[in-house]
Image (cartoon, rainbow, N blue to C red; front, side, top):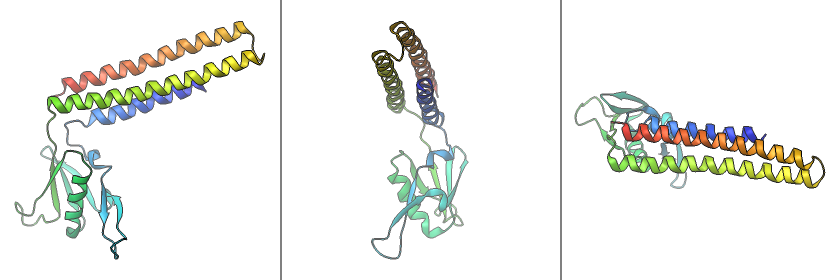
Length: 193
């Protein structure tokens, strides 16, 4: 139904925003979840991308991500993949500091700057605006359906007007949830140290 579509839009917004804001400035293994590593195949054209977790484990130590490759030969490919993911992270091999750690990468997670906070607020604004657009689309489809039902004599004008008022109230309520979510997340972003 329309209310379910609107509620789903709010939940998607909440989940995406929580993921975005939740790990901001913190070393969280989930930061590398979307990193894809290019695995060199046998032929020059048979290169394929695989999730990082197929080649390494990711942990946290001393406020940094520690990526431990299962195979030392894959370290340079994993390092390249982290750079290519454009997350603003810089992996460093640990072989020079600890001779036994040829298959370990240390990825320092930078502390948020004013600029990065503002960029994150922009991303948050975009995410919440997508939710608002979804809510408006659902409302628009429902209004069309109500008008079609009135024109087709499925419901009377009074009943259609009541449904329209209920729809407007529901839209306003769900839109307010997105606004509250945005303000809450924005405050936590700007207040985070």
